[in-house]
Length: 281
Image (cartoon, rainbow, N blue to C red; front, side, top):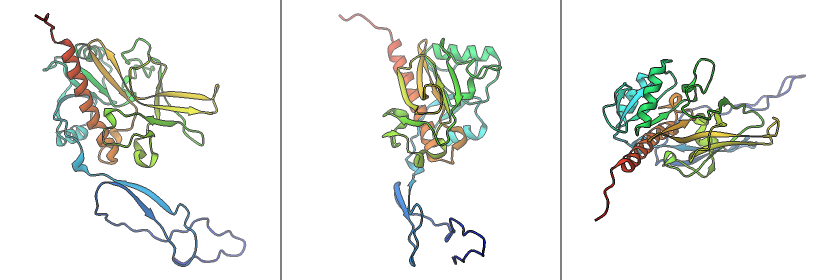
């Protein structure tokens, strides 16, 4: 690239593109660093960029049967390709302790919501992939099956922003979980919405915190991924942008399959608890 002198009375550009091309990288999955050098002087801003390579073959294959409610056909096909047998959500589960995956386009029929709550309460586990799933009329958490519903809202990230923090948890299996979620790695999956003001969860996988934020009190926090009990079962809340990033961001692929594996684990635990106990001889 030739950097020309700015015409009289004009300012030179702050940045000048010198290379725009694509290349194919052959190597194992992991973290890589792209470094830019200029042979004849100059100082590239942001000289080094860390990026990640993921191997689709390393994704888990849950081998579970799940019921789908409010999930697009494209997502159903993706799940089938990755070892998840899918059935539509129905009013009579074919199995005890069913696994249910709920998207963001659910019907407003209260009977369907009551049936969902019944199947969870009898030992099922539901994964709510979108915080918009609970919208009831004008109430964003109207269908949230908690006595203390709190709120769910879009947090305004700008110069002042929240920090998303993940803890070691099965839903992050195979993903880097060293405290604050790396924005370069999680990218477009980083959540915008927070659950706030609900009952305290006994199973939190990720939460967000904002300190010194320009609001009354200067502090905000909320849940990103957590589960709650409901009767003999549980349900998982999630605000990570998984559905819109399947096959786009490998993190979304891994999170969804991990959540299904974790839901199956929770359902197995509920079955063990529900087994009849006989007195010892």
